[in-house]
Length: 198
Image (cartoon, rainbow, N blue to C red; front, side, top):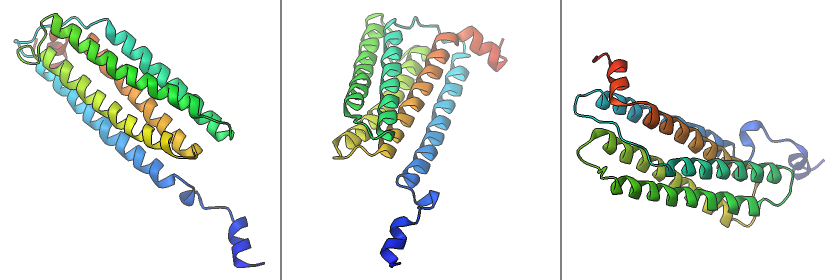
């Protein structure tokens, strides 16, 4: 048996599988991003425990944002399943990306609603943190859209690329749900109790 025939029939070691290094890198990145968002959430709670913070009414558009992110996550998971079965996944990828763009546009709409309600970036810590947290998340969504465009642009939608894209979108969804809960539930009074100020 020739060396090339032997190499062609020898299975790759798991660490040599296509996308293995990218998968590890994505897990590391998501771990770092989780730490970053967690620290911001803790800072939000600590800052709200001060006496100068007042609760803000979150705009209803955030529920629509959540729906867009859920839809994008579902569509990208469908694309990953299709890619693993050797089926075309480009339509689901395009629809998932469109949902991500709709999410970002919807977040801008939510910001406009808050600005219309006179909740500015300065003054009230609850408003300031709302803008910082949602902008930070939108920045991560924009980064995901760059990766999505790179995967979408490639001639072959390799299953591992589509899977990594879907994994990152699930992460963005989980982070958003956690942020939405923190922003919805934690008010200055609860923050003061958590921090032992009252």
